[in-house]
Image (cartoon, rainbow, N blue to C red; front, side, top):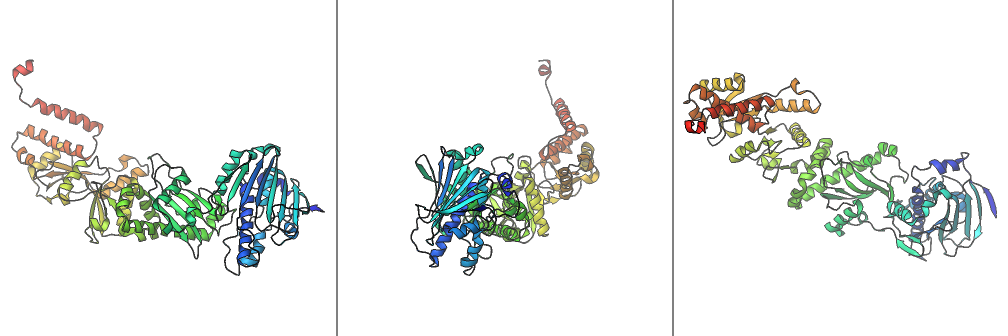
Length: 599
């Protein structure tokens, strides 16, 4: 019999462990089961090196809850420990057995991915919920089994004993009176599913003679993408997220050297304008759950991505401050960005029709990504899709007939600009939709990247619809007087007799500046984009207007001007009143019989 006190460098460390080791007490179960996985991985490694007999390959971890006895037992059939190892790795807090194991068996081979290691105080997290912990362990080397027991004050007892199950380790926790909720089967299964759903060895939960396997030992991200169907990816997404709809796109990452990480990322459909985009990606360490919602590992533009990342080169107890400063994390983020671009290229080249079906929802990620990550933009710039008002899609190159320069016409409001769209389409000119703020910012971004390409909103100029016409002094004076505009704000062009007698245009750069001021909360009256009235000299209405009496000329010209405004934007309060009065004045000119008036 040997008795003693736990060797620590800080006095009273057990109360610290019990209260503050982790912010989430549930993690104690992950720590113990992770150690069990570690023990099994060590044994498998020794067998592969010929240093241990291959006496059993049915590896497993069993979690057993006994409510009546207030005990929780975690058993494995891994490498086990002899008395010296218990002294070294259990009685001396924060000395990880994995370090010695890696030095002895792994580093020479250059393969450390199978050993978790670096748990530090991990085992002692059990004292957050336990008043006493026992270990019954038997080493693979045939040494006598060892029984170790420690109370919540740090006093231990250790002796030889018998372990009927043979090689492996049992960790028996005597749950504290105020933590007996951890013996509830539903709570335990919930914790196990959160932290152990994808651990590499079978994890079983047993209570009241009922046993069920908790985990999938070969999750999708560990498989070869060639062996996975599209339906497999969709099914895993729904299982992972609880979403009932298919994702827009997925990216399977299988990085080998020099980064060594795996994962699957999904782009979900944004279901409403009120949904707050937020990434929800779970971080794993060799299939052991570490954390969720890890923004730091993801490129900034993946604002709504879902999925998993398995990074064996990150420590199991990784902190956010570590993630923010670690160079490996930065490299992972860059590699993810590259893989998203590669996937986008692949789908565009091989499944363009499928891409176009979801692109309207997907474009918010790609457009934002291009503006935030120039390397991402460079990889997909030639295949970026733009949606036309007829619902089809084109690239910039396709719109410009593969020329490296030209003008692309767009609308920021298809409904409000419906007449302009119809006029452009009648001339064989396609119009691009850019209805979201990110869309218009993205178009300006493309302009900055390629000065030979210009984007013009369809109400910014009518040059594409027809040629400028010589000014008619009489008509100009008429339209200046009814519109209240300056001489230079009334222009003439011929864009087809079938089209409106006049249209309003707003200078592109002037309007952009005004939009920017509004976006930053500046008052409208600080900047007003000047509206230009362009009179269509090809319109039959213009040919007739000069033959009308002067008073009727003014009403007709005012009607043409107000109609042009209505096609361009909503009326102001004053304009609405003017329009009502105008219609009343026109109606008064219509001939009506005396009988009708008397009636």
